[in-house]
Length: 140
Image 1: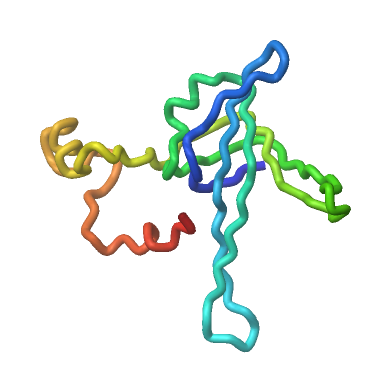
Image 2 (image 1 turned 135 degrees about the vertical axis):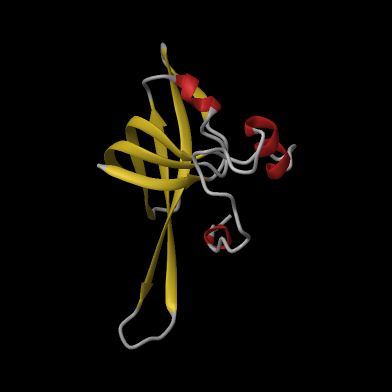
């Protein structure tokens, strides 16, 4: 299964016995228009992810990055101390592909692109023209 989402905070490395696991959470947005309505509704689903293959990927899984993940979906259900059932979705990741890297807060994006490539744009993406509405739809 493949899912794409935006990382909600920097990945964390945790120990599970003798092994280390990379844990992070992604937000997946879905927009729809209800029948008989003219307004769009947005639903955000948060999915906890674990990547057991290599913790080195953590240097790229940063808050704001867009990732394409392959793996399997699961659910964790339990009864809390008040007796209420609680559930969460998790994704056991087999492969991570970075679709868009997180922006560095200490650099101006235009300065960084000029420094890296000597011109605006980096050859892999089109230069931004200020009309990017996708950034306004992020839930965090």
